[in-house]
Image (cartoon, rainbow, N blue to C red; front, side, top):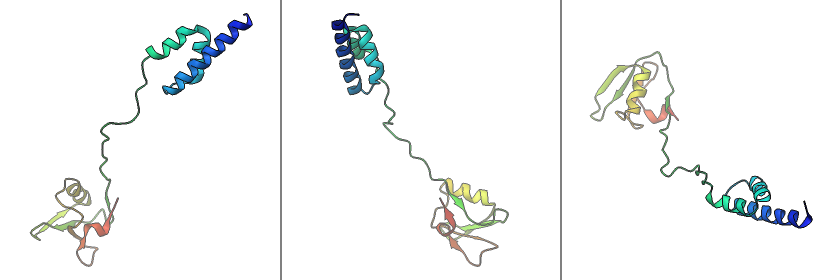
Length: 126
């Protein structure tokens, strides 16, 4: 390989690497392509398909995962919007009611180990 060809290939490879870097591609790979294929390597950068971005246009909001601290083996009760006692229900059923928005953090709950009714937010952990 004559020195002029080597210098030309290096310049074209460097230019390919620069363009690849600007387009978010691997500059080392595109330097090699430009070095080996010359001007065709530069054209290949523009005709190669773009990589898809990893950002979501409409990100999905994750629901918080709630846990209710308290006995899992006892029956639970809650007061509905009219302050009528509902239950007995299992710990899992109470958690399901929370997920289905039948109850919320301000709902009063009770089980036999509690001395008095408490708002759910006092025993709720995320």
